[in-house]
Image (cartoon, rainbow, N blue to C red; front, top):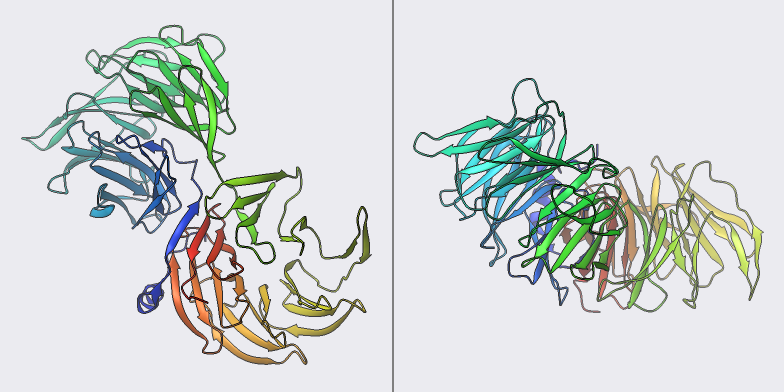
Amino acid sequence: MENQIPPKAEVAEVAEVAELELEAAIGFNGHVPTGLKCHPDQEHLIFPLGCTVLIQAINTQEQNFLHGHSNNVSCVAISKSGLYLASGQVTFMGFKADIILWDYKKRELLARLSLHKGKIEALAFSPNDLYLVSLGGPDDGSVVVWNIAKREAICGSPAAGLNVGNATTVIFSRCRDEMFVTAGNGTIRVWELDLPNRKIWPTECQTGQMKRIVMCITIAVDDSFFYLGTTTGDILKMNPRTKLLADTGPAKDKFSLGVSTIKCLKMGGLLVGSGAGLLVFCKSPSYKPIKKIQLQGGITSITLRGEGHHFFVGTEESHIYRVNFTDFKETLIATCHFEAVQDVVFPFGTAELFATCAKKDIRVWHTLSNRELLRITVPNMTCHGIDFMRDGKSIISGNVRVWQIGCQTQKLEEALKEHKSSVSCIRVKNSNLECVTASTDGTCIIWDLVRLRRNQMILANTLFQCVCYHPEEFQIITSGTDRKIAYWEVFDGSVIRELEGSLSGSINGMDITMEGVHFVTGGNDHLVKVWDYNGGEVTHVGVGHSGNITRIRISPGNQYIVSVSADGAVLRWKYPFTS
């Protein structure tokens, strides 16, 4: 099962060793509805990545990390004053899902609010920071109002009626701390908080014959109307006092793949994002596009900077755009993989840049600034592994074959077919006379690259995922699904020692320093571990990934460790030892 919670023993084991320092993260979970937020200080963006909430300075790109969730973050909210952040998570069926209240200035956890089960669907703060309202997921179905000062629940209620679907979105009034609105599948409700009796009273809104599934909601600055975006691709305008439908549109040319996010502007008009990636400025009652641009990926967040002269847009393909309202032009300010990252590699002898590959594309990143320098997209091909050529001028990705690469020609020298299953890792000896391949068929083969024949075969009852030469090249270390790290003699293929690499899940990536003193591993327990080669002991552990770690590398010169995971995240850690 994905995102397994580590057993208690594992957490205890982590506590005894030093912590790795997380320096930077490349990633943004674009699937979280309204997950991208611009802080009221207008200098920071806040967004989820796995089980972490990132605070990133817009100008300097400096990052802070809020760690505390045990599983993926499913929603984020910021109070109007900017003092508080709240984030909710998903968890397993029947377990309680936490809401965490954070102090924004101190970047620390204030309280854990646990009542809902399974998932927190949405969160909203009241305009004067008095209350937080939370909406449980499909297995929970309740709405709860929390007192922020006392950090406790005031009251709760089922979010939707009996004969309708679930409520999936919530918004507070802009003026009053006692009114909020929930909406979802066939349900739109305006709620009143009755504090003396600790009750919340819902009123169903009347939409007549229209049956709609609401995806998103926004409310005017003066609370005069609220607007709902639907899966049908139209917008409903409701009056919160009369609870009646004011108007609806567009009548023709509805938004393709639904209105996935919507924002009211102070100067009037709406910003609308569709599931097909269309960003539109329009006005009631026609809702015809006045300005529009096409972006990459379904739009999941629109967040205003100040009054909205600038605003930021987040998409499902993990792109973050800055848009200037007057000329309605977009600038891509952040991007990352939106699918599992399969491999990561540094060029020989430099730590200035590195490359990663995911399903459809290969990307080259500048290490210090986290900027994407190059993207290579190969359609209809899944890229599982990459490497730089020694001169750093080309990148290789592909099947296991030996190629002779000349000036203009690539000639296939030999296809070495012995593995019965997919090859998971290849490492070439520095002399280029020998290489080792690890496979999920339970074998590692050491090949002679001059005679193009196999020298040695190592058998074990595991699916090998990774292999490394010790720099002196008479030993190799391997690991895989049996969670053991094994040291082998290259000469005769005999096992020297075995270490218990992890308490849960396969080990998928390992790398060793140029000196051979330390090596690093990462796998399905989501932990980055630094090991002493001779002692066989864990010295440091890095906690930050929320997906299975697929590959890990130490940079040339031992400055950084870069790990990549199945949730699309690329994390850069500070290497703990000075070389």
